[in-house]
Structures are given as structure tokens and as C-alpha cells.
Length: 102
Image 1 (tube, rainbow, N blue to C red):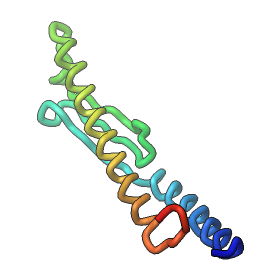
Image 2 (cartoon, rainbow, N blue to C red):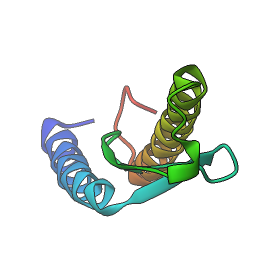
Image 3 (cartoon, one colour):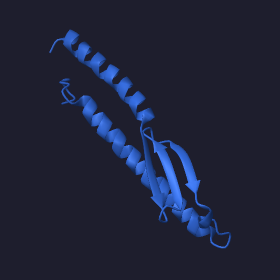
């Protein structure tokens, strides 16, 4: 393979990577726990965007349960976000033939 071809492929990949990062910033996923008592929204960049807690879930006598609900929802939202990012990245490399990467 010649260097010019490799550079062109690398530039195409770089441009697609930048576009994918922009798209991931606009993707949101949602996860709930406790039957909807806790809702967490995350971006495609694995950042928590919001946490919503229903009034019924707030019990000063059982803070541990609320903590568990929040933790469960956050972990599920991040897992969904990572899956979305992984899917986006796999689409990114489809069709590119870069020696050493395929």
C-alpha cells in the first residue's frame, strides 16, 4: 500500500470520527428503576444528563433503598449509552480498508 492511500483513508476515518462524536453528543438514553421511581438520562458520551426522583421514592427512613434505585438506574443508563456509542463506532469503520486495522 502506498502512503498517499493510507493518508486518505486515515483522513476519512478522522472526519467520520468527528461526525460520530457530534452525533453521540445528541443521542440520549433513558433508564428507570423502582417501577419508574428513579429515572436517569445519559448522553451518548456517557455523561449523566438528568436524574428524576419521584416524591414517593423519598423516604427518610429508607435512604439505602433510594441509593440503590439511583445506582441501578445510573448503571443501566450508562450501559445503554455505551451500547449506543459502540454501535455508532462499528458503523463508522464499516467499509474502510486501512491496512493493519482490518
